[in-house]
Length: 251
Image (cartoon, rainbow, N blue to C red):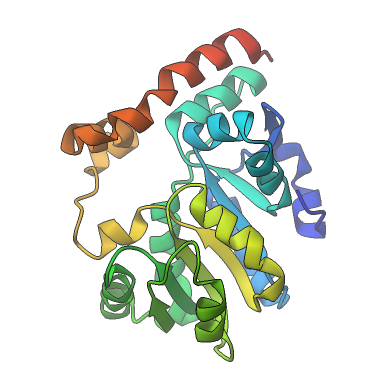
């Protein structure tokens, strides 16, 4: 994880889970850090929203593990990871879901004069997500573009070039979006960049997100599995993560 004066002040909130630095602070603290970073005109501040699937991939993929050490902030996006942090520290951390952060940042865009760009998603979901937030919050939209996670880097960079982008939201799905950011970070000129997974699927209206009740109890993954049984292949990592934490993570 990059050294940064703002992050250093919060280093007591950094918890290592299987050699991945996780920020255990609240969503309010995350937003406070983002506001401070953007106010300082710092470029390319990178946030990853990490869940158990990230961790299990990073445990077996050394290159992906290195990527999660390049970020400025890895936040807790999943009840399983929150449980792992609690098991190690004895304190229950707040889940900071990427989709919730997207909504918060878009709601704060107008008052803070943040220009937000929506990159990725499937079909025109980035465009429809931008339109949704523009209508709901009068979000300052810097643009939107789908593009491909692999093979179109130069085309995408050309699209982004010359635009004033304070926040770049990248929705290519877990790992692919982080790999895209890692490849192109040095060429970007944005205030902050964050991988947002399936967020555009939700906010474009193409996929219904779990109701508040399910999210409150950390069961969004189960709701998604019920609605999309095909995700079972991805969810098999959860019991593996549970056992790994149970036998290897101690306070």
